[in-house]
Length: 112
Image (tube, rainbow, N blue to C red; front, side, top):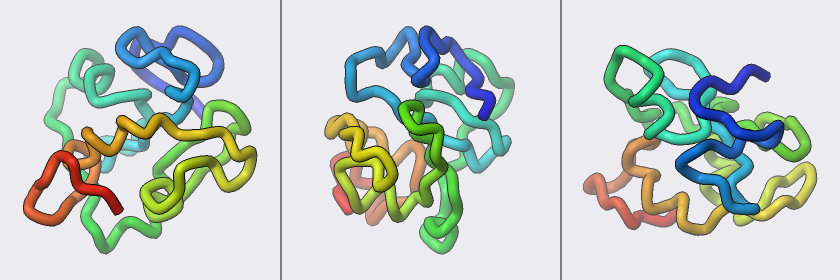
């Protein structure tokens, strides 16, 4: 899987988010390309981010940089770790869900 942006290692960490648990990349609805974060997308694309609609949460749009598996948006949002390799997701990522995914009332701290 090709991950675009400012990637700094083979698990998908980037110059913006590079802690141990920062190992997922997101396929952006607007372009169908994987980026580690919204900042990488903003710096490396020429279009606005389009969040995934709730009816599309069954789509595989999350890439685990540890085991190289794709997850659905539901699988990602409803679990704290990868269902394949059990690597923990960064719990602070949900602060940015409103950028990537349609949320209720566009609440930035929405949890699913």
